[in-house]
Length: 448
Image (spheres, rainbow, N blue to C red):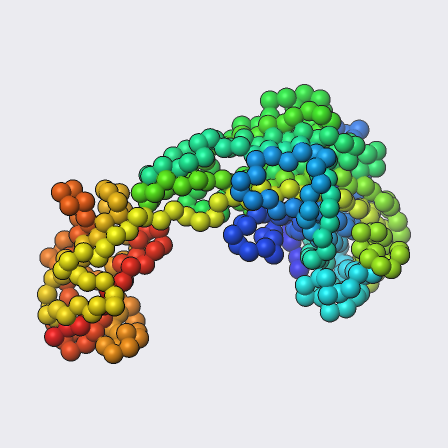
């Protein structure tokens, strides 16, 4: 697996691209355990040069997924989560290397790692071009871990209730580093990655505001495009016990007539990277990691190698602590009622004359406008009259006389006049009215 990272491997700082976690999509929380390490530039005195042709990076991440109702996490509060690892081999040289390989070993039982049958686990490819990286992970696990993030964080929104028709919502994210994990070491780097996302379709970013107190050597990057989600901040060289506030304004649509509670996804990673070896010669370098030891002391780690013996290595270990504020994933639904006469609802089958125009009436709890149908809706398809099983492809309906959907304020009902086809005589069909909220509402018809 190759990803183009340009020259960022010349000075690796920060952490990787976001991937979706293995939890159900309901979480839609965005992890930052895998992907491309991105550079965070800072003061020249704080930079540690990468004086090598090749770079080996191993990331051990403790992570917790929090429900949408969670608004804050304290630095010293133990979180019950899981642990994952990532491994990257980068080619900083001006020529390709052959046989890039990452070999991962652990004293844990392979059964704790989905998709792993035994250790060691090896990932390799034929070659790696200049300026490219090779990923040997991620290595996901079901290993429970209790950890403290070491930083206070919060996610607050206003308003939290999205009315019918939608509205703008202001999201405020705060981070306060509280312990020495977030002091950049002389031989490494410490920082934060913040990604704002949404599990509800149609949410868009209106504007963002950066922290206004970056006056003590901090470095802030806006990653464009974001690794995932709607927006991404990268904060390097933070100061302890100093709160950083990130603000975004979102446009949250609500095509239904039902107000709903909405929280965006917010993923925060605090990370400290340590350079273990710079300009180490040889065809391979090993990074030992006690978090992979399991029941076998000194067994955990990863070996990064290439075929050539003329290269030098910089090896980097990273400890990451991820807090994922999960957001809303269920879109609101219309308050549907119907169908109303002359159409009866299942299990009744409506007997009608083929070629007639049928007024299809329903209510959505008031006037929700006319943009309430999904594209291509309503549609119909032939079904078996006895079993109601589908018999042919779904067809888009044709409205009578070119008419369109209308709303009758006197009855509070929508009316769609469905023009049927004379050729349908002697058959049965199912009408499917799909609304813009994704819901389907059907009625069955027998034509004579």
